[in-house]
Length: 85
Image (cartoon, rainbow, N blue to C red):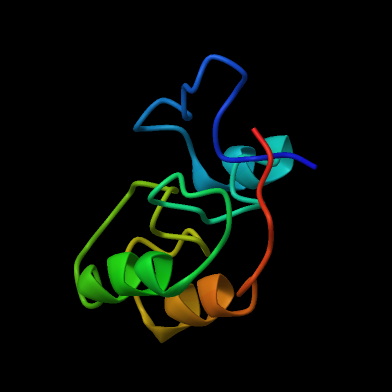
């Protein structure tokens, strides 16, 4: 599957529009800590961003410009997913 990073470990450029990131599949596995799976550490990471304005598609999963419960739930819905990359 696709991961948030390319083979060299590079994520998308910071100002990449969320729709493009989603189209490219960068968002497919929200493994923020690089552990190889979506787990409690990843939920803690996204939850710590809650309420903040963000144009970073790495955290703003739905592209609305703010980290909300929707972004947290999008990460939670991937709980246990094994990420390749």
